[in-house]
Length: 470
Image 1 (cartoon, rainbow, N blue to C red):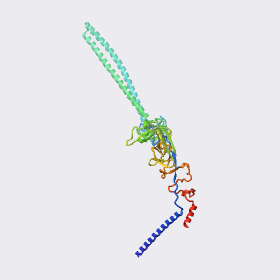
Image 2: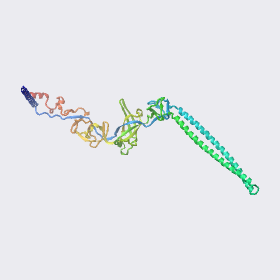
Image 3: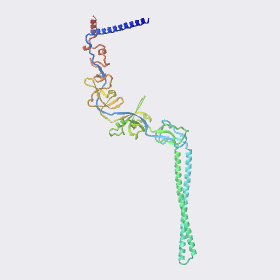
Image 4: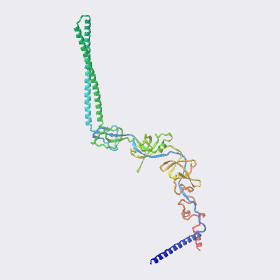
């Protein structure tokens, strides 16, 4: 039974194979007959002409724009920090995010009671120092008068001792009287020395009192400064940001309460690669004064401002490369805020004998497709000088000056392909419009071609087929 089943299956497959071979032979015979009924050899297809957008390359001066990104920051910023520890007893109404303040305006006041008490104590100490200095000066005056009296007494005693010595020399006085006068003169001299020492002590007391008064003045100035530190004022006209102070809160010394920025003094920090920086300083050119357009793109519109390059960073960050330059915003800073991530367009030096073309015109091989006199394409290598957005700046040699090139390369375009300018409209009669390669021209025209070289008309083809079947 199994043998019979396998035999029947083999016969079925054999007949199926012969049937398929017969069908293939029949299809081949039918195609040959249709070819014979066609009336001779097949017509040659028309040449394919593609439509492409062309542009003319004219050499000239091109100023490239370097498009980079940067961050807005303020050139003038002030941190408001607590100059004393204590409780905030006053907070200005402008102390909120975005508040506008003016120079000298009191923004925060910390409880000044302790500073006021210290100031009054220092004022009392200074008054004591002034009194001590006045007493020392009076003591010097008294000591000077006492010294003058002692000196006059010494002069009198010395004169009496001199007269007594003269009398003793003439034999008129006694030795006892002479000794008494000399002892009195010596005592008067000792008194003079004692008064001089007292005067010196009084003058030293003046010096000490003056130093004490100077120290009291310093302590008083510190107390006044400590009292002034309880009031925090705006250093310049600006806007408040990063506010952390609240009325009634306790703050510590040097605690940051807010920041003030000057919205009219903004700059852009722009990181550049070494190649970009080298292009800006090529030929010994200085970057100062180079115009920069600052662009802030958003979903609802575009904000722009004008700036100029101001300086380059003095050092390179650790682990970084390239250069960082800063552009000072000169016009339109009202729309910008510190921290904005913006696009900067920097004007580079002008390039001569160059042209700006779409980047799609340059292929991966670094060449453009040039249209010759027969409207056929030739590959011409070009030197790309700059790339900016969807365009490139190329050097225009003499062979490329005034030539027409393909603005947008397509996969079907290559060397030897015939093209026409898309801006000129449809091709003339007999020329095939653009379409996929290998498509018959008469089929694309719907069989309405009237040119004899295009093949017989549909009625003649039908008559020939009927004659062949007869």
